[in-house]
Each structure stands twice: as structure tokens, then as C-alpha cells.
Length: 372
Image (tube, rainbow, N blue to C red):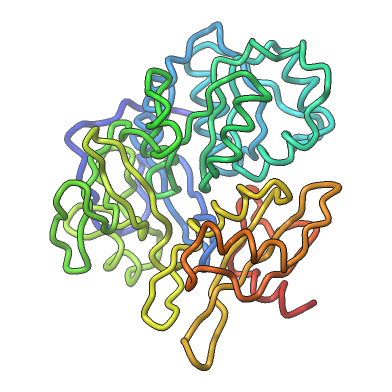
């Protein structure tokens, strides 16, 4: 693969008329909330993103990792493999080329891994199956990276306690050639626990529903611009016209930039639940549910309601050995959520529906409940 240095003069996204000689790969968006789209990555896009990852984590030849994420997705390809190899580090590919909780810990110890990156679902699985004897890796990890979906504070704290390493949340998507921002090793606990850090080589704006830039600390849509931002979707003029506006990529995510320049992601705008005019963030409710000691995973979504338009539904995966029931979880929610945020429909499942990269597939949540 030929990677060219990013051109600082190409920060502004341009209309997509077709493939060019500078295009390196065509990637699919994840399709977690809709149909996947084709995204061409240029050599410049990839070089900028790889450099952003490598620089943010100060990767060097002494670093090693285990590829927990699939390489057909930007998370695994850019962050785990190419950023590591570009700095002279080592990458171990798991047996059969895919993540396995049974072999992961041995792989981590054998290669002397100094870090790894994964989605929250994989972090949860690894926590549940962490070996009692952790001498092979405990104390060796410089950091653990989490990206591609929100990681709850409760899970983050548990990971740090079990694995003896700081957890650094990152924010990114296919349209930014993976990473857009990340928490750094030098950041304090507040930044680690409450934000996704500062942009890595990109500019960020927070705008209101009229496209006007919001004052600092005000909530609005996150928009991004920079050399890692792609120029558009392939063969989708309608999506390009609404998503790439005035040189900025509209992420569709709600968020703020705090007084330290850190990005706080508050959830997907299209995922918000409207219960009688009250706007509810599924991600916020999920954070509360996962903090319950009897819960390992949770997914929250809107359910059609004749009176309120929508009410809150939740699919919950219990921790092994837990006898938690809906009544107990509802009682817990009353202590931590506003009345309108409390799930009115709780379904317990053995696992959540996932995309190929391991993120929750929100398009299948309602179908999972209906099938029960």
C-alpha cells in the first residue's frame, strides 16, 4: 500500500465526482443506524489519520499490541495495525484472524503488549473472562484505548482496576478515516472519564439546528474539518449534499466542547427519544443501566407510544450469576434517572445484536424485542 503525506492545503472537503488516482481504499460506513455508505479513503486521508493515532499515543518501536478489531474496519486497520507498524511496533494477529476471548490474554502476554484497542463490547467480554493470574500482562500495559461506541464510566473504572492501566476514550468514524479525537496519557481523570479528548489534526465546530456556531459549552451538532475528513460518499449525491456542508462534515452527533478544548459526545441526534416533547439520550440511560452491578451491557431505544409518541425501551444483558429482574432494575433507575427517562419496557437477553465490528446494531433492537 502506498501512503502519501497529507496535504495541509486540502483541509476542505470537495464534491465527490468519482474515484481518483489518490484513492487508496473504499470503506463501508458501519450501518449501525441506517444503510451503509461507500466511503473512498485517499492516501492523504490515511496518512493523516495514522499520524494522528501514532502521535497521540506516542507509539514507538517498543510498543506492541494484539489486533482485537477486524482489519476490514478503520478501527482495526488504522489504529491497531497501520499506526503500530508505521512506528516500528509489533502487531499480533489472533488465530483464525478474528478476536477470541479464549486466546486474547495469552497473545497479550506472549507479545508483551503495551496497549490494545477495542469497542466497549469487547472490553466487557474481556473483563468477564479476565484470568485470575494476570502476571503475564498486569503492569505492562501503558494504556487501553476504547473507540467506535460510548464506553460507560462504570466499565472504564472497572477496566482500570482490573488491568492496572489508564483507559483512553477516542472518537471517530469512517468519514474521518477513523480517529477524530482522543484522550491523551497526560490528561487528568476528569478528562478521561467525561470526554473523548481533543481533536487529532482536525478542527471542530459545535453548531445549532440553524448551522450557527454555538458558544463554548453549549450543546449542538459536532462538525469536523481536516485532512483526515473524506471528500464525500461514492455514488450518493443526496447524502453528500446534506452531510458535507461548506467544507465541514456533519457528524450527526450531539456534543459540546468544554473549556479545555475537549469534546464531549452526548449521543446520536437521530437516536434521541422524544417522549411527549422530552428529548432523551439513549446513551445517557445506557450509562446508568450499565452502572448497575448486575448488568454487563444495555441498549436503549424508542418504542412507539400512542400517548407520548415514544417511550423508553431497553435490552439488558445480566452479569453472570445475577438474578436481577425488571422490577429491581426499574427501582434502581428511579434513583438515578428523571421519571420520563426510566425504561418502561425492559427485555433481558443473552447478548445484544452486533455489527461486524462489534458495535450495537441499533437497527435490530426493536426486532429482537418483538421476537420474544
